[in-house]
Length: 388
Ligand code: ADP
Image 1 (cartoon, protein in one colour):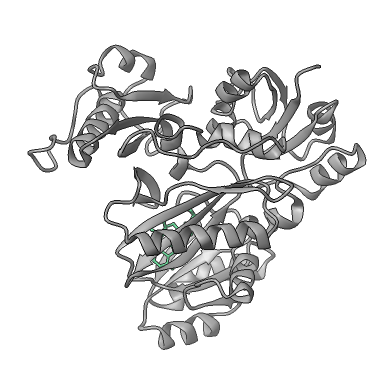
Image 2 (cartoon, protein in one colour; image 1 turned 180 degrees about the vertical axis):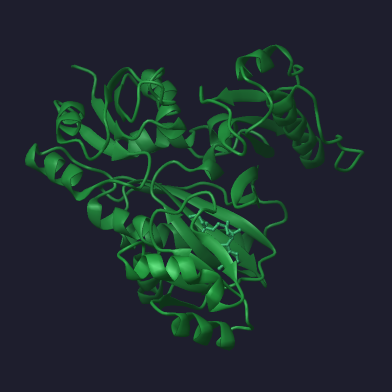
């Protein structure tokens, strides 16, 4: 039997991190990378260089593939059509992915499902926004429906004039806008599930994620002190969303915890930053699980392998050559993942994972390792100290 070929559209770190599990499973990973120096270009078994809008490149990546999947949401309809013409399954489907591509479409669907949404409204005019602000305490979160990531496309507003530029852009055919109540959350959670085309589903433990400047900085698995009933409810919600939206592959439901309940923030239909911990902290990591799901293989065991796993992102930093960090991180059990990307301020260039029995100790070791990778020295103090 020849190795199954999984085609992936998008050459960032998420595609890169599928390669290890693909190799282990005997799967050929063929990736459409945006440029020869994209993060996945150096790791994938086969690459095609091109953009998702380039029909020839898409044809090349699909040729002989068993299934095609995505590492980001920006997939043109033509890619789905090209896959359908060749009889290649595309997961998640165009219909499912629409709910991760567009926050208005997602909010409408969550309302229809009875899933917990914050108050929200579409915004076409200044009056729409001012009316929402007046009804919700004078402050709200304005978002572009499409194209946002890492907090770009999200703005806290107190008056419609603060949104002049976005409202003008939307009127000229730019991304549609929606406004949401500013949720007074106690923390952010993420509930990840995997689902196969036949409908088999598994749920990972619910994790806590901490954002800095709109970018995920740290994840703790499982979410400390989370009420088991709320954890089960969040997992159940993610399973319901996966089933109702017919998601195949990994689904992350980003949640706000507020007053002993959860509210949906957004959906991601792919491996997600909030699930990187599982590569080193669960029997089956999310990248292996995604491959298993889209190939319609039995799903893997999601049991954690340690009481606590902490993932800390390496965001930007002062090093030109991150690889030199490998010799400097003490042997503290930290697993280091570098994405082979150029360092730019705030850019996700890698992450570290530490697993352990004691949460505080595990957290401080993960932070210290991430700081050393980033800057060559721990910037924050460890368990006994505060921010340096
Ligand atoms: P992105 O698509 O860029 O990931 P999100 O919609 O996840 O954007 O928003 C980024 C961050 O902004 C969230 O992680 C959260 O911290 C904050 N945020 C988003 N929506 C709200 C909201 N309705 N209320 C309060 N904070 C919000």
